[in-house]
Length: 288
Ligand code: HEM
Image (cartoon, rainbow, N blue to C red; front, side, top):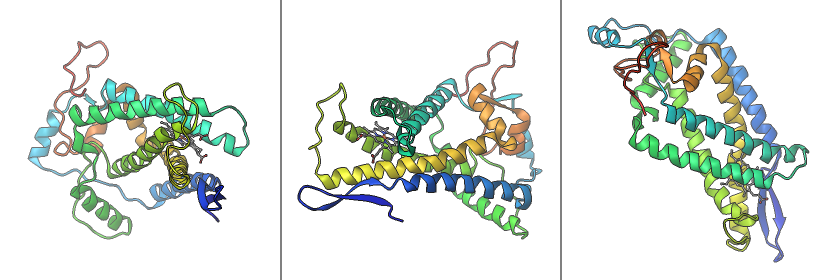
């Protein structure tokens, strides 16, 4: 299979012009394969994850946990859903024409691209200055626990596992993949706007040489196609029964004390204050 579509420019040079659209199907199949393998792994192979550790420090931390633990602030939730909406528009406008649905997609596509770009800029500033910046990056403890979880799945004895911080390793890895693919489509997409008519600047297809444009279109297409697998996996995980409380927290902003104590380590994700329950007066905001 050829991963790239090539063409000859007026000077007879062979240049890349697009990614091969067969990769769209490869990415969709990879996403579906991931969910089949994951469902089999969780159903038949994975062993229960973390056991409670009878540590008096942990018990004291647990006693301070409120009934509703704030997980995503209003700003973070708004960002997530704006990004998700723009992402869907980008995927449908990009790929429906590739599978034969003809419509005028380019303007809707770059407008959604601008919405995505602005939302990502907002997120970077918000996460850097207002949120717990380091909570989303994999750390040594995640790697040690992942290796122990794998050993356990193979039936080997291991030292006790720690519960998660705010984000499990798989969420951190997903975030990292979306970060790379997202920056790639945004960076290339903004330049590609010079190839089409927009109200912002005069169209200039000669801004770069054929080869640079070609590489840009290929990178944009590769990252875009990659999103098909990433988003399929993300939606599948979001609707899995054991993860659905996380999806609900992206709507309502909080998780219950029970879910927090079941999945999270109060030392790795300390929380002291919560979200008021219906009918209660408003408690101070914990996250912005
Ligand atoms: C999930 C995100 C995105 C996906 C899946 C995606 C996908 C695609 C695909 C498959 C193409 C066709 C490329 C080709 O013909 O080789 C394309 C073109 C384009 N995209 Fe995106 N894109 C995304 C984000 C963006 C963003 C963020 C922007 C702008 C900020 C953008 C602007 C453009 C432009 C201007 C074109 C060129 C249209 C043309 O030359 O006819 N895209 N996109």
